[in-house]
Image (cartoon, rainbow, N blue to C red; front, side):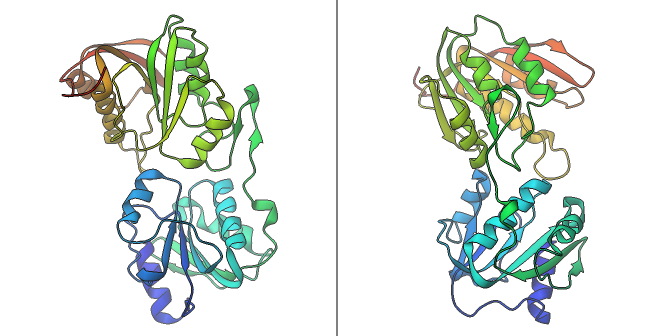
Length: 331
């Protein structure tokens, strides 16, 4: 979808790239075709680890502003989109081209409306259920810059990360269900900005907590929110991350969207990852939307699992005795 608009814009002269200088592409996703751009001059700027690793195979992922031009791939969050556009305006040389592209379902109409009046925005090009427009880098977007902010509970977050305004209901339910005698070596998969981590670390029997988070901005906030010496932080895709040693407990509220549509396979991959990294007598504490079909994968991954708490929307599951322990993992 994005490539259709980009190719049309380049073919028609709606977008004219500079002949020299590096071109930044902010927050593309796996599946985005960037072949219409000059590969040797591309820098992909993204804090999402799976996308970072994907594009690292074909182009630079090391930030090196100032850039001659930029393409901003619009995220779904309105605040996140504003912060990303402001980042591009700061990092592209004054007068350089900034192209903003996104799907209608991701709020491109709102983003372009927000830009008009602040910058001299071009006419938009519409194709493949989305839009593309451009402007020249310069002042006017300073108010949109990402700034860390305080929320209830003394936590700090950044715009655009999951549940930036406060803990989501699922995580709150899981936090209230975790046993008081939770202990040993614990992993928090998809740790976000640290809400569950703080609850876990309130248990004195916890010896170590590994926070695994794919979104760099969320992990940055977690490092601010969690100052306990028992915590270790990992910028990683939890579904493929391998710990140095097996855990006694895994706690998680796994994501279940890989795009706009629900993708239960993502949560299933988290469950299988937990199975691989748990000791033979280890256990999983999981919260999930009630409608998600996780029972089959839980049965495949653990000898025992049952619901221990729930609401009409969520359920907390305790699973124990993981199947098929990995070979050679250290205890």
